[in-house]
Length: 239
Image (tube, rainbow, N blue to C red; front, side, top):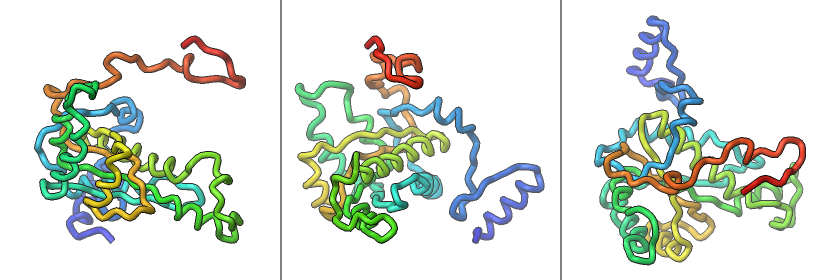
């Protein structure tokens, strides 16, 4: 049920002939067309220190929760990190591999100003248990049934939805990896059980274009559909 203030806003919107869709009891602005969201999505590598409002954060998380999952297993979790107490140890860990001569690419420092980080975590066991049930029948829980690790793929869907939802909210976002050798310490810092694997992290905040040095898209062009799509039959294409 909507909170009282939400009912008032919704009533006023209807009276004015406006449509404000509702997701999970929140009024969702829906200010941008989907095609515009997709077109404007890019990896943002610099942020201001402006905080992300709690209601905006919740809408982004609810968007992530609308992703598909094999057998509706939903074998993933989302960890939010906000404020210095939560983000400080995370950035200290992640920046150990940045800033030295062996690390190529732009500075990672502007990313660490992001006020919100969401870590999507996949859980293989939930999928194996789900597909061992009677309607699926893989009672041996053998991973060889799976052509690819769907637990990681489905968790990746949640990350993509957060990237898109962030654009719709007028924010920027960046998906980046957590180096494998740092995952044990990440687990220790935040109490993450061994059954959950962080597939990466999504930094979210208000973009700071003046400090954004860009990424690979500055030097590598996006492929055209002619280069990307094989229609009806595989054809060798020029690299």
